[in-house]
Length: 293
Image 1 (tube, helix red, strand yellow):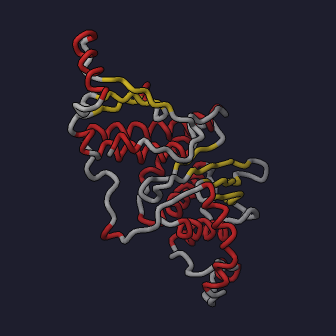
Image 2 (cartoon, one colour; image 1 turned 120 degrees about the horizontal axis):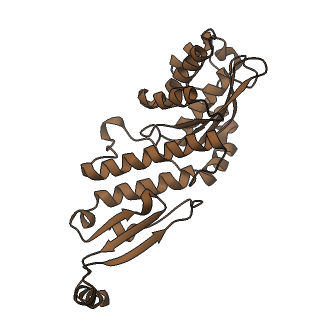
């Protein structure tokens, strides 16, 4: 999805659930993050956070809450069951609000039904929010309104332009089942990290952008012929996405490393050269491209 497409989704949410909404409020948002409040009572406010990865909507948003209530954890985990196309965020938010209302014995708020509506073609006005269908400003007005903010967002967040659905390649194509299982385990560990942080006010092991970037690189490695043919292997140290052990098993006979590999085999009984890759949790781009050439 393009940045502008995601921004349209977030702006639509904000137009419905503004900071003064009686039940659910969008407090702040960026293309990779959403902060919300659920008003349980006049004095009890539930703080909810959402991290949106670069591969959204192919990858589900990650939700966490500032509470150690296991009922809330279960509600957030059930959001994984919601899988509905390009407006996944809207549908997950609808499910979240409805489940929270049930948990706290509150009436379902009618505004949640607006989340089933198609995204507005132009900027969202207060008239449109309250149900009128009058046309608003032109596309040029919208670009003027969003232009500077788009540039600022793109400085720190990069997202693929949207591709036609029929031509879009699945991110799992060409990856063996055992490696898909590793990727799924990493994804679940990341989600649990966020849930643990919300419960204990700790620190997440890695930024969303960095983790997402490394996951993409790992997918490309698992998809590469060099990896599949056994030229090298990759292991995650203690299941950490930020530390890799790469075992180089085959090198070009003309390379100086070839003789080193022969010596290792003869003297140490090792048929590989071990390389250690460590990545900073704050990285925004990483290029281990030599591994999947």
